[in-house]
Length: 193
Image (cartoon, rainbow, N blue to C red; front, side, top):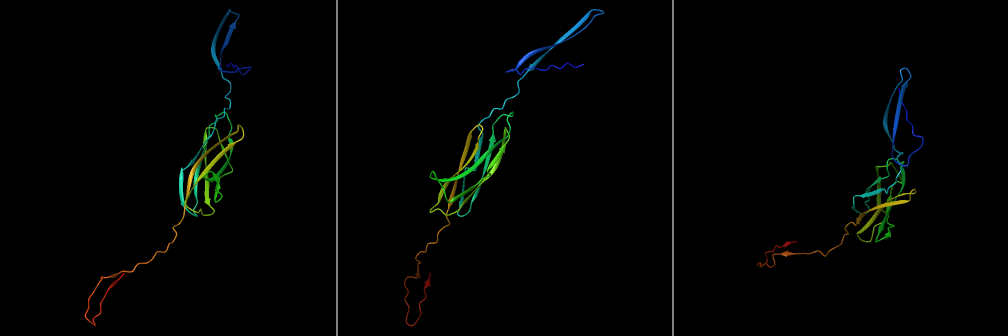
């Protein structure tokens, strides 16, 4: 037969118990018993941990008006007792610490990541107007969750170069050889470069 041992209350931590079973009869008067150990462990509790975000590669270069893309990897470090978390995602571009109005960034508005898992998405970066000179922008991706309140971010560089500008230069003319002597009316020939 089967003996089922069910805890009546949840222990605050792991507890060891002894479960015993006894059989007896009256004729003849006999009994037998045995014991077995039982460890009762409380269910795993959800423990949250700071997520990790990585923006890669660390730098890219493109000639205006060409844009580029970066990969965002987001890892949810909560333990397995937690449920998936929906992170709000943002991406920005800055030049010398100030918002770069001539750089457009696009990223998925949210990313749902299960505990102990990693998901990726893409940041698209597009120059909307040319800088006055070659410039390097800081591209930052952020992941935000509300409960618990946590924000993580990572940054990469984006360098925008400009196409070469045509600059007119003074032409040069060279006659060679430098000096000739001919008897009239014989012609003289020179090489013109």
